[in-house]
Structure formats: structure tokens, C-alpha cells
Amino acid sequence: MKDTIIELLTDIRDDVDVSCETLIDDGILSSLDIIQLIGALNDEFDISIPATEIVPANFNSVAAMEAMVKRLQDE
Image (tube, rainbow, N blue to C red; front, side):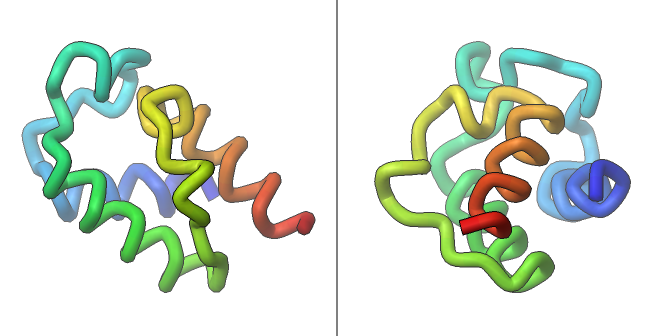
């Protein structure tokens, strides 16, 4: 799952440092990037990310995105 998220992320922003833990806090990902990423994650993992999950903490790192996807798959 982690590799897939990294692939999706680099498809959206090929210059992103996937080891970064502050992708949102440091402004590395724009709001448009996040919208694209939400769509890609929804499609790839057959989930629906609700508005309540669209918070910086869930998109600041690959690990945070992975945890969110796993949580949503379990629901």
C-alpha cells in the first residue's frame, strides 16, 4: 500500500520528497494537489474519503495517508 501511495503522490507532484513528514504544514502540497490525491486514493483503494478526514494530519506524510486509507477500508 505504501508503494502505491508513493506512486500516486509522485504522479501528482514528481518533485515531492516522499520521506517528508510535513507535506501540508510546509506548503509542499497545494490544495489542488490534495484534491487530485483524494480522487486518486478513492479510485485506487475503492474508498470514499469523507470531508471530516480531509485534515492536514491525514496528508502530512505517506505514513499518515496509509493509516487513513487502512482506517477507511476497515469501516
